[in-house]
Length: 468
Image: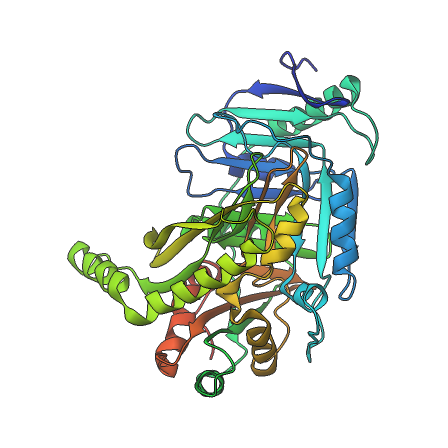
């Protein structure tokens, strides 16, 4: 078939990409057209803010899946796929992701990556999975411009070839052209809380005792909700419902075979620009929204001055400053925003921003290791908080509170924190929700906060109230 003229982009000598622009297509339509292709990953900026892009990748040219105990080696292998060129200028326009490694690191990988940590729980699924994608679709939300980009690489380490790029681009355009919207795909499941209110509040009280005794300053405790999927339930359809009810800037759909991840995350773990600027955006502090403007404004203002919520946030900012200082240029770590207010569907959050400049002798994967897992979903100090979480929570977290994102061929990187996320394995869905526990926490209110954080997902995919 005829495709538009291709333009070229020389990323570094020997690494050439070809791309073309096509008429605008909505991300959801593109994902539905490609949903049955191997290794589909949709990095989904469902909030569609001006200047944001969504990305779809399929047919990886290499894959890696590592069980618990092998996450460190797997990440080193992922890093070997990427050989970023010297510092590039930040693009003023165009997609930030230009192809590369895309995947996730499960929270369970923390017991591989941090020293002297062991878990009493059996890990759920692989510790990390990544694919190497030389071809992608990038959709600009502000203009609905769609770019299809390919490096024309058949296997990891192979050279770029224009005829291969043309074939891959043509294949994607054909699938996009065949898509036709269908009937309403809404599906529902029954969610059940794994832990009772009494059991979870008892864990919160035990965490507060650890804080009182001086072990930690804060810990994030979560509870799980599970559902069995009937043969007619497609997890992808549940994700479409989640993203409508809870649009988020760091959402994602990932399907690497035995595990699917559906995330509507509002939180970035870490990003790295081609100029080597690292940025973390921890979220700590949450309150509900109201449909009444006056009440909603009151809730916002109350969150901004909440002693407990600000204390939680500031503790995690200090933790992140320490994490980044280990891999960033001396004196470069700063906090441009402290306890700023951000608003999402159903919730207001306090969000801070921590930045630094990655040292010249380090790679993107070194930065990712330095901050994983995110302090906002562990606590402070991080190492002891993880031990206490493992002691108190009922089971393995799996992908929840891990990270999903990309490391580009150009050295750019962006990873979310897998909150507001459902993990699908063996016809079962699991969603977890948690909150930061401090000495000021009230156990019943903390339990209710987990329900509040999970409400948009549970209600958009469930057919009834959650069974407690």
